[in-house]
Image 1 (cartoon, helix red, strand yellow):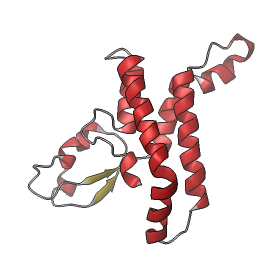
Image 2 (tube, helix red, strand yellow):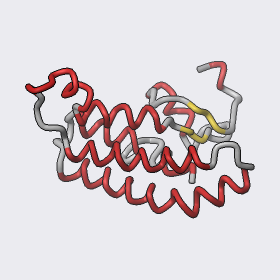
Image 3 (tube, one colour):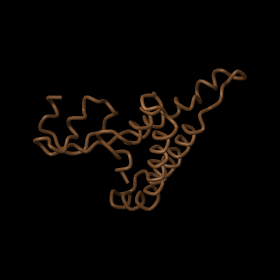
Image 4 (cartoon, helix red, strand yellow):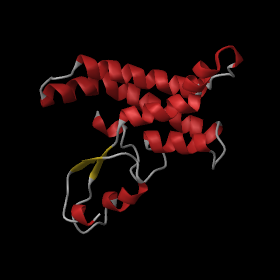
Length: 148
């Protein structure tokens, strides 16, 4: 990470733990703001839901996780909003995100917190997916919601 030593600003990266020190508020240079990827978060929930695996199993498919499926659906609504504002000027983009996405993001974060707290064992892969995808309990807490 030597190449990012003097960098400050926004860093778009996946949830690689090696970057955590860059987000530390006590960092000598200003901390870096994390811009995580919604597609990655959606993919993790998609896999957790078992949607792709069930499609391959056909008639022998098991139950799809309703919790993860709900998260995929909520993220799909955000994607639809983003498709509708693609190419819009930055100030207008921010305004529209605050109007249309902020409430959805708060609900998704609350849903993820609930899933992590009540429906997943503390060290299970599903809890890890939920927390890292939405920022719940991670060093870059609420980074997904931060774009609105």
